[in-house]
Amino acid sequence: MKTPRFLLAVCISLVLAFTFSCSSDSSDDPPPTPVQSSSSDDGGDSSSSGGGGSSSSGGGGSSSSSDGSSSSSSDVVVSSSSSVPVAQRTLTINIEPAAGGTVTRDPDKAAYDHGTEVIVTADAKEGYAFIGWWSGETQVGETAEYEIEMDGNKTLTVKFALIPPGSYSLEIHVNDAHGGTVHHSPSGAIHVSGTVVTVTAEPEVGYAFTGWSGDATGTANPVSITMEGNKTLTANFEQADNGTFTDPRDSKTYEWVRIRNVSGTAYNKIWMAKNLNYDADGSKCVGASGDSGTLVDDGGRCADYGRLYNWATAMDVCHEGWHLPSDAEWDALTTAVGGTGTGGRTGAGAKLKAIEGWNTGSGYIAGTNVSGFSALPGGGGSSSGDFGNVGDYGNWWSSIELNATLAYSRNMSYDDSNVHRNYNGKSSLFSVRCVLD
Image (cartoon, rainbow, N blue to C red):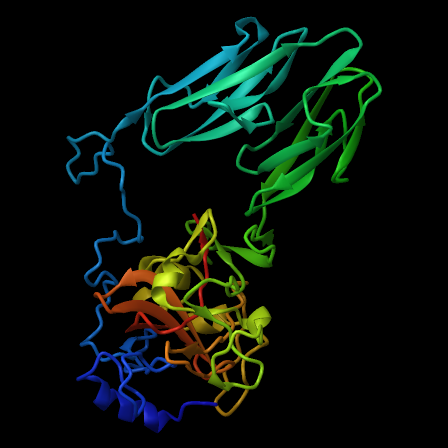
């Protein structure tokens, strides 16, 4: 059910004295559809909760940085003064046995700035086989190349083993340590002659597997290797513009998209191309009964539009390796896809909206989805159970709060080509899109 425009205007005059109120009850929750208090050319900042004028800084009372990040490590020095150095980290590599092989590191330094990514590569000497990488008692890598982030002092152990008579070694490499991982069955680096080993390449999000080189070629994945001699195999990966991944928490599959700056590659970030649909406390699923009514947990339209989350839940609901986008990250996205004005919000909505899945009533403005973002309108709800506007409006949380009760969000409409920046009561129920760390 579409919210009449005159009602939205009336709500503006009412909300100024309340933390929310666009409905006739006295609930502390905001209305499910953000009220657009501005129709400025830049897409506009607006509030549906009447807590005073919104700030274009996106910071509000938050202590987060402009990208929503913060540091909790007590030994990392963060200062605006160039005379205060960032903490240095050391990487210690143990070789077992010492005669088994060598290790190179890139970059090759005695100490690293906090957060530096280092790629270490093992090279077995003749008669030995590379076994793997260990951190303490845990094996962390099966390929000769391994990437480690220097977010603290680190110690790695690389293990080699003598190849016994009648057996051969299988050494596996990757062309890009960021690109993916390789697993094989049976496991182990040394195999009896004649053993058939199945090798599988698994690309990371943002990459695609392009084929094998070395003692196997082609793009078959997995590939079988017969151990009739020492074998070396390289899995090749390259950056991809889109793909899928599976959330290990519930085995649901999502599309992802790499979004680049329309004028080049200055912006290069990976976003989910579908609203999150993870069943967490503090979330609700839209019922299948229609476009308005009561929020229920019967599965309903969640497969298409995702679940709706309050802000506290949204802050922690993205799976490992992903996060809720900050206010600044939303602006960077809308600017990257070719939006103009403040935060790049003018015209960005049409570029982000999915071609299908939006209601096509009076005033409908179609999305082109040239970005691949595929924004879908999941509507919005309140903790009291009120819900409305699936198919008409999409509302997505950011990680930045305005104050103790309000947080920033983004809104798109079926009849608008812009993206709107709002602040809403944290108990509101909105959609979530995650961005890759």
